[in-house]
Image (cartoon, rainbow, N blue to C red; front, top):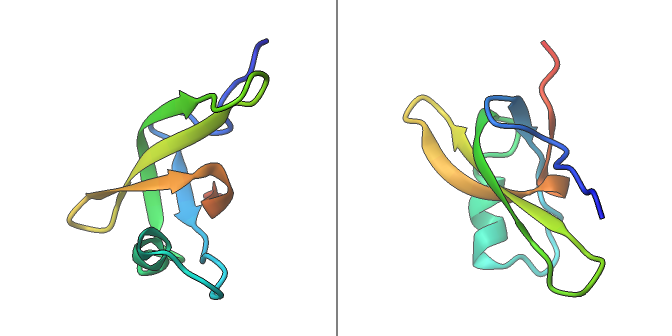
Length: 80
């Protein structure tokens, strides 16, 4: 199985807002950065079941370069 990440280190992305209903603490924290441009600092993958692979990204956001953890569906490519 050859699964590749959607984003790579150094790529710029925009954080997307998370749906408002039933937000977890992590999702509330992500929403504070919605609309901001960040840079992929690193990524990891997990495989909870055979045949499934999910990528988790560390994204550096804002002028203070705060690193947040974001799933693939919580960001989109930054097109300048």
